[in-house]
Length: 160
Image (cartoon, rainbow, N blue to C red; front, side, top):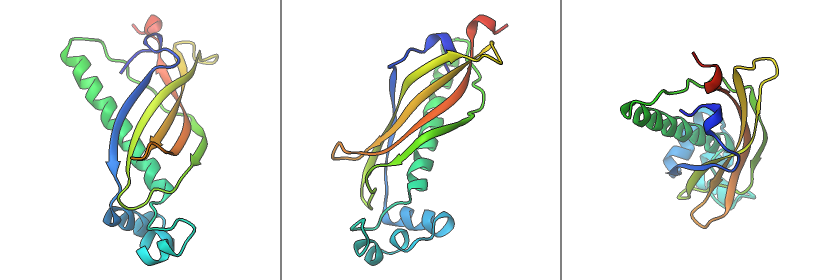
């Protein structure tokens, strides 16, 4: 993982894609969001969605998984190159969660993250605060998901 000083506003990274199958949509919904349009093709077709729709929480969970897997891969690569790896802190939360368009069975969503703001923490000057816009785009190039995430990132200058 990168240190605060290594990141610039506008940096973007693609973190991966996921195809939402009917089976995966129903399994997630049965456990976490058992609404009719997430559980039944017929109910989905008869809803405003027009088809079996993934829960927005499912879409967000997939984005999170792909973000973590991508970070783990990048960290492993950095260690293999002999680089010092930053251990990021927790996230104090997110804002502006938007489910922009339904994700239907068969849709493949590509997720990305772009740094939109950064600052040094006032209460913890050895940490930076990073904001990144996480987005999901379907196979037609249409945005379907967006949120503004915040994370604490260690500063290289104070790491010793």
